[in-house]
Length: 440
Image 1 (cartoon, rainbow, N blue to C red):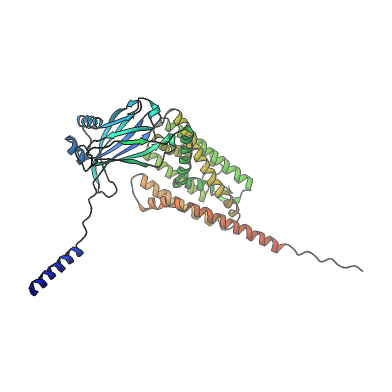
Image 2: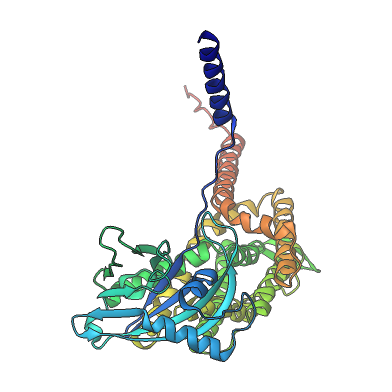
């Protein structure tokens, strides 16, 4: 009996050791359907991403894992999704049209890459007054795959001023208690043209604040602004008034250039993304070379205006992606452009005054050349990336934007030090007042 007890205890200890030392089982995260909503003035577009394996299992449609989707298969998928996608509001049922079916490979939080089917659904209400409050009844896939779920995300809502930050609206899944799939009730915030305008203004500000390449182009044009060219070099310091006038004309020319192509691109002018992004890198490289040695002295406004046309095309891609029209488009162009100008003015006001002060010191030449060379290296990294040659330089160049506030602060500190030392030198060199002589 005693021996049997000891054997039992030994077995329990061994089993516990196995359990304690075993590697924990990793949870398997199942891919989910995602519906991303973009709210417009007359309808809502929904970008759908459906896991291919779940779609095949639920619908029985033979979906290719990759490559082009045959037209008949795309039609089957569209019909299947439309049959399981219903939107209702106070005025009645909405029209749901599914198109643009394609395949892709994607990845969600906690999942490995998996094949998926993408599509775009246009949701049109019977009355646009109901556009901000509706019920979304969607049971594609989950009506057969009970473990599946669908996440609904608000990607953009111009009237609410939400044009750059996605937010979750909720999830659709099987209710295991009732055995039903409850619809999702969507009640959006009240919208207005003013909120849409201010949202686009903020987007314009952040586009420059976070756009390291646009910042560097403007900064490299500012570097030689306090200087005058002579015999192929930057030799003399311009008077403050002349430097201010020069940078004012440069900024206005850049503004006119990018405003023109921003409007044309948003209104439908074809914009080839890769060549435009590559040309922006070229513009920065040329501006950096000009900051080292004058390439086009006195013609900076013309060059800024020309390259402004290129930068404006890149700006327009942001607005085109929102697919706006009518009053929303007009207010968006105005707000977005105004936001860009405000941020450009902030950059000029932050950087130009200390540059004017530092330009009168011997340290400005090495500072200007070092800044221009660093910018040129960043531009080369971007250019290589944008023509398809990925290098570490591109990622390093992107990180320069985080250092912008510190660079501006360092320039101001250096300028203050120069002014204080100059003032102390004047006080030191000033002759002492003569003592009055007493007369008898």
